[in-house]
Length: 306
Image (tube, rainbow, N blue to C red):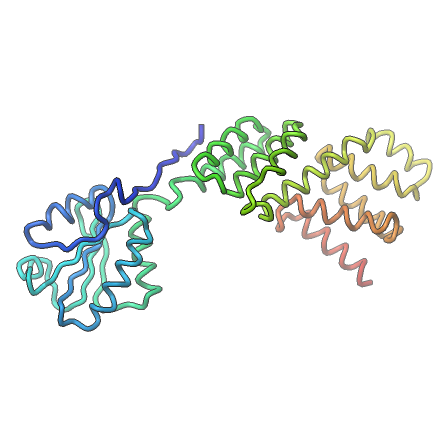
């Protein structure tokens, strides 16, 4: 369904102990074999090493935060001189990372906490994105919606929400997909039932703006009739406003914005500034960097401050 697999990231329960003390005897099992499932970071240290006392805990914290996407093995070089010599450990702390049975990266000396985190994240990402592919699925669903496959998009957004119930992008996308299918009441119910943690998310604000515009479009009247009204009276404010609503409902967003800008220029105070309010509603229903939004905001600003 997705066009990209949703693969859950490894968990501690599935991967065994995340952090353990290793030895020459267990190196093959703990590092080489284990790295065929997830990357394994090996920390070569010694009790007398000052920098090791800083680096070790930082590595452990970052590995723990990765939630099973990477493991860590600590090897005391004083107790395991054979493996240290075999890997040519010349100073400590030294860190190697193994994946698929091979060393893939490493460093010597203590690093700042931020650099330790970057290193661990880089290693964890060798197994795939942290979200298990949800970002790719979300992008695919948005593409479906843009291409008019609203039902497929809705199914994909719903599947993402099964994996991550508070994914605001998927929740807002599901609402927009229902709007595209004409299910305004379903879209409203979804908005009303949004979890508190998502209620103010920008993705839901966008969906809310689109729902408001869709409801207005139901009572705007046919585009041809509204154009005829304006032909008879080019200064008919209500006809201009309703025409902009009808144009937006027909997918003629740029023309709708231009009509509202014309109304604002003609009478910015009409109906308590309805033209400006409607413009902001349309802008809120689009992406912030949409060319229509950028051009419309520039024109509106030039009129306000003229």
